[in-house]
Image (tube, rainbow, N blue to C red; front, side):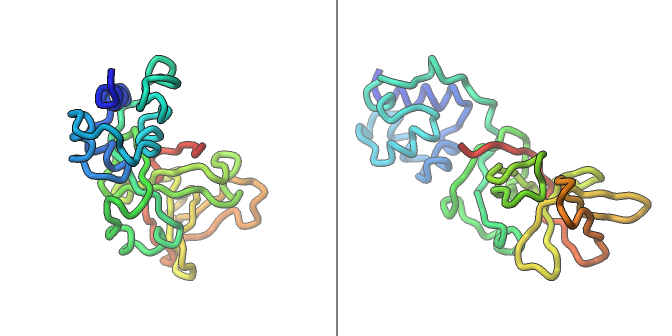
Length: 205
């Protein structure tokens, strides 16, 4: 088995299309197509390929080391979403202008819209439910209801915040998950815009 077959085998085992793999690697779909056809023998982005295919560069090159026999197939990938900053999340117009290769992308195993983006959790306000460094997938087109974890933009802040949406008696609040956080509830009274709902979380290793 050569590198072309190993790449295709790993891509198929992970449930990725050529377009999705290209997004993760940061290249064009035609490059993946050429690689799997055997036209490219020594890809320059072998490290990125290995990370996306959850194996080692040595396995892709030579068939040794970590391969599909000891890496369990992951969930079916629904889409990939770009990792953005909290400042970008606070500026909605910037999110819609993110291009396919402008940001690191992550695989999302749940249904999501094309506008879905990824944020890396900062701080401890959402512990123990969410730890600093966790990845949250945010879908601006998903409905935010009572109990949803949401990303919101406060009018007096230039970046977004991550909290739980509480709706009681016709009133709305943003709630911190950490019981020791000093500001447990932030009233929503026209001073806040809900950017999107958290639809999936994951750990960044």
